[in-house]
Figure 1 (cartoon, rainbow, N blue to C red):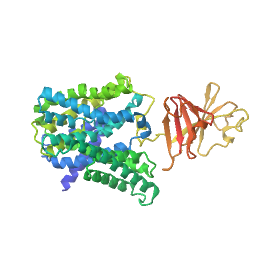
Figure 2 (figure 1 turned 30 degrees about the horizontal axis):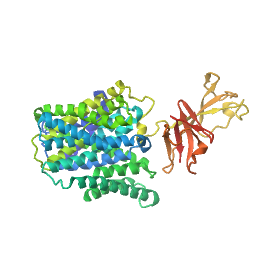
Figure 3 (figure 1 turned 90 degrees about the vertical axis):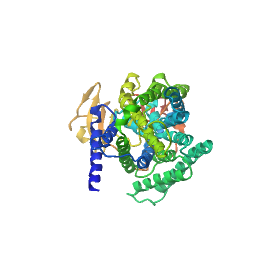
Figure 4 (figure 1 turned 180 degrees about the vertical axis):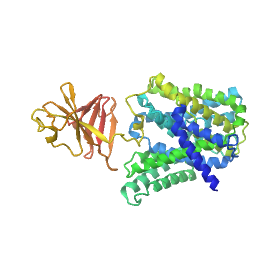
Amino acid sequence: MTIGVILVATVIFLCILADKFSNRFGMPTLILFMFIGMLFGSDGIVKIPFDDYHMTEYVCSSALIFIMFYGGFNTKWSLAKPVAVKAVCLSTLGVVITAGVTALLCYLFLHFSLEESFLIGAVLSSTDAASVFSILRQKKLNLKYGTASLLEVESGSNDPMSYMLTVIGIGLIGAGNSGNILYHIFSQMVFGSAVGIILALTAIFLLTKTKLVSNGLDTIFMIAMVLLCYGISDVIGGNQYLSVYFMGILIGNSRIQNKNVLIPFFDGITSLAQILIFFLLGLLSQPHRMPSILLPAIAIVIFLTLAARPIAVFLLLRPFHCTTKQCILISWAGLRGAASSVFAIMVIASEASISYDLFHIVFTVSLFSVAIQGTLLPWAAAKLDMVDEKADVRKTFNDYQEESAITLMRMYIPPGHNWQNKAIKDVCMPTGSLALMIKRNKGTIIPKGDTIILPDDNVILSVPSYEPSDREKLEEIHIDKTHSWCNKTIAELNLPANELIALIIRGEEHLIPDGKTVIYENDVVVTYQ
């Protein structure tokens, strides 16, 4: 028992070190977790004999639930909303098209049976949220045209469709009860969505309108709600992954208290879940079996990367007038990873009779996908001129916080101002503020206590940043030409009594608005509630 505990701790420490040094290796962190698992596996250095697919399915499925929940919880809906329709098309129809094209190519070129081809297409049809989130954040890769948010929503929401296709595939191959496929699709989508929405609203009500959950127990309550959501959805025939994802989005974008506690907690839980999944996948793999499946695995990587994924992306996104460069980058960002391998394990645990080594094919495909596509994703984005240097990808997540603890404020001193012709030391400044510089004509003065402030000076102050309470909210709204506020004055907006437009960011300008200020296209409006 003690040796086992030491071994687990050692694995976690190694994964933490892998995360620390992943940038030096030039590859995504998650693939290093796989390699650590392989080192501990039966073909590795430690040589732990491990081939329990049933236990791996249970553990990885449980871990994937929390990854799905936090994927929704940490998605900032205000930025994801403009691309939500495109993302949902990719996560539903895109998954079906990807699965269909992959299955057809496997049937025609690899000569798998039709049922087996459908099964491998279903298992590999979704992109991996953990891999996409990890690379975008690790590389601080923000993309033009809302592409980062599109990829986040798509990768976070397409596992339910892939899971449903996999269950249908298991039934078609004779290892499960496929039943009425149309009813199965209906129950998975409708019941799964309903459970997630109902339990999310229940959780929000309990956290905001009652005192049932004591301070300090918010994290335990949320874990219980995630597990309850998964269990109820499973019992009534809904899609468990869809349920927890919907619940995550609704709760994460609500005004619940102690969200600043929940975010780092679930960030840690999700990191541990990712380590667990990728390590177990590496531990379960047997590299000596990979040479026999290497050629079909490479063929499937080519099918997915150069045919199935691009066909789905171009068919669905070109009608939305997405540029060719954007479609190419989204196609390249279709990483396969943990979810596909978990679904492959689920197939094997169901004792489906298949003629090929499904797990090692999917594992090898995921390895190639994360290693090659994931590593080259920043390079591809730069080559396609899709990197947005002026934006921070972290702002697309709910856990984003400004790093600076101070805020700079410009004070213009018009003629007649009560600071005019006074020394810095003699004026009454806001508590905790400091005069950093004075902009005078075209020059900059670093002031001292005896520096005199003149008319038309711009005094730059550093002031303590304000940390809003849990019930207060600052939100950035990006104005496009279709927005209802575009080309209107603030007085015309009929804002609620508790909402204020605090700032308008227009290019390099930061404007303090009044009722006559007109909001234009491409403005960023900061509201306070």
